[in-house]
Structure formats: C-alpha cells, structure tokens
Amino acid sequence: MARNGSPPDQVAAVRDQLRARGLRWTPQRRTVLEVLAETQGHVTGAELIERCRARDPATIPSTVYRTLDVLEEIGLLRHGHGPDGREEFHVGPEPEHGHLHCAGCGASWELGSDEAAALMTAFEDSHGFAVDLSHLTVVGRCRDCRTANAP
Amino acid sequence: MARNGSPPDQVAAVRDQLRARGLRWTPQRRTVLEVLAETQGHVTGAELIERCRARDPATIPSTVYRTLDVLEEIGLLRHGHGPDGREEFHVGPEPEHGHLHCAGCGASWELGSDEAAALMTAFEDSHGFAVDLSHLTVVGRCRDCRTANAP
DNA sequence: GCTCCTATTGCAAGAGGTTGCAATAGCAAC
DNA sequence: GTTGCTATTGCAACCTCTTGCAATAGGAGC
Ligand SMILES: [Mn+2]
Ligand SMILES: [Mn+2]
Ligand SMILES: [Zn+2]
Ligand SMILES: [Zn+2]
Image (cartoon, rainbow over all chains, first blue to last red; front, side, top):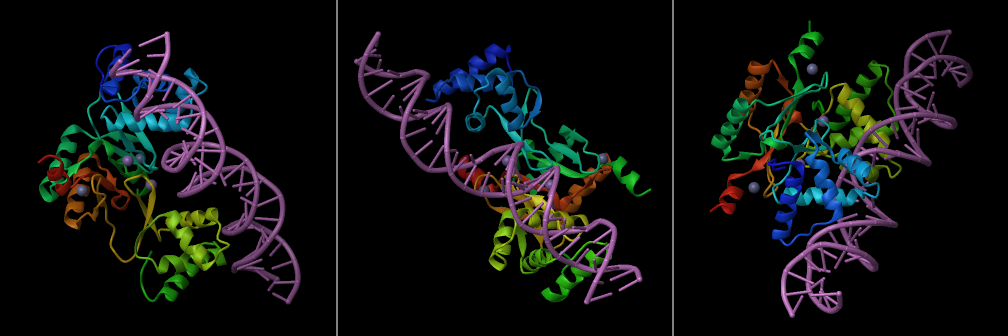
C-alpha cells in the first residue's frame, strides 16, 4: 500500500484512485482497506478475511480476494509466496524486498537491499530478465540448522 | 526420482528402498511409482492423480499426496513451486535446477547451472545459507515482454 | 501357511481459494 | 431526486490439498 498520511487519509486516497478509474467504492472495499491500513508486514488472504470479519461479520471471502486482486492490479499492493506457496501480501512502508526462509527451523529474513540488487543485476545482465523481487522467497537451510544437523 | 535402468527396474529399486526402511510396498504406491517412472519434467499433484486414475480409477487423492510426501522424505523426489505457488514435482534425469518464470507471457526457463552456482555461492558466503535450488522459482518479466510493454 | 504388529488406506470433513451467474447497488448524468 | 449503465456482490459449486480416525493389509518371524 502507498503509505502516506494517517490511515483515514490513505483510505480516502485509495477511494479516489478507484473512482478515477471508473471502479467503485463500496462498504466491502472500505473494510478491506481499513484493515490493510492497520496492518504491518505480511498477511495471507485468510488472515485478512479473519480481520475483516472482526470488523464486519458479513465479510465474504470471494469479495475480499477480488478486492485484493483489484488493489494489486492498480499497483497498491504486492504479493509474494511463503515457503508453502501461499500468497502473502506485503503491507507497510518497507521498500520492495524478497525473503529467505529456512526449511529447518522455519525462520525467515528479509533479503538485504545490497544482495537483492546484486541478484537483480545478475538476471538483468544474463537474460534481460527483470526479477519481481517482492514475489521471491528463497528456501534452504540456515547456518544454525546446517551445523546442528552435520556436526 | 533416481533414474537408472528401465522403468520396471526403477520401480523395483524404490520398492526395496521402502522395505529396507520398514515401509510397505502397496498397490497404490506401485501405481504412483509407475506413473512417475513414465513422466518427464514437472508434474503437479493434481496431474499425477489424473494419470494414476487412468491406470487405476480407484485412486484416492490423499493416498497419492501421502505417497509423494514419503518419496520426498526418503529423497527420491523433490518439489518446487510454480509461479502460482502450487507444488511441482521434479521428475527425470535432469540435475537439480531452479526456474525463471515470466509473469507477462507465462514462459519459463530452467536456470543455467553456472548462474545457479553463482546464486548459491552468494547466499552461502553472505549468510551461510544453503539454497534449495530445486525449490526456487524466480518470477519477473522477460526481455520480450519488457520491450513490448515499454517501447 | 499363520500370527501379530503397525504402516497404510479410504473416507469424510475442513481449510483456503476460485469462478460463473443472477441480483444489487455505485455513481455519473440529467 | 431519478434514471440507467455496469461494476460489484453474494452465493453455490468446484478445485486442490490436508488431516483425524477406524478399518485394512503388508511382511517379518515363526
Ligand atoms: Mn515447498
Ligand atoms: Mn504469485
Ligand atoms: Zn534454520
Ligand atoms: Zn514474457
């Protein structure tokens, strides 16, 4: 999400962006946007639905997923995939980043921007390929798990 | 899958490996193994179930998925994730490899071993992290889609 | 061949998503 | 404030997997 101003301002900005594109502002979308404005970090669709239901028990899953699709299409939201493949939406002021996930202990880290840049440059140079960094999760085993397993 | 010898030999080898571990050889597992022995490249669980059903209409999904788990646990199979996050099992003689997937045109390529090695070395050096290459799918936009979109 | 232990299976229920469709409701124009 | 177009919604059905549990059946040992 674009993160400028207080949550109410952010939500109002999205409303205006939607209307400017001929899309509509509905109570259901308002709920999703308000929940997103209060969220930091990563959320799965299911988590989001749960939080929307806390605010409006009549929340319908398909409506939430379709709203997420729209927000992503107009560039207000991005998603990556957790180590299990499930979509995770990136929310908050952090810049675009990838993830590192240990299959041993389940820990995960954000990819440093220096490292990310190196990775993107490498694919750019070799294939002319523009990596979608925020969609990337690199899975493997961390140092601790490796030394623990092969002492 | 280890790929040595004719399909019947491969299947027999797996049967022996299972028994050696106190696991059992069942008609259901035989079906899955036979289908895998005839398969090249990548398969999703659902595709595998479909092919098993062609051979044995009584095939039950949970049994197939559990068999795949076992085969992966004992190291005979690996999975990665497609761009949509779904699991894809790697089958065939190719060495471990990652994937590059274009979100624009849907094309995908295998990562070259040189490039893969560079990527793995980078994470090894910076974090002591051992990347699971076959689990990796890098999503982005290919050269063609980029020039088509921003001429 | 028969026994016995327990790995495996089938089934039913459930989680997380997606999709087609008819009914509803934004909102731009009058 | 009404009207009319059409974007959205709710719903139901469906898809891909996962899980708990009771019944079944490998296969090692005799
Ligand atoms: Mn995985
Ligand atoms: Mn994705
Ligand atoms: Zn770890
Ligand atoms: Zn492309």
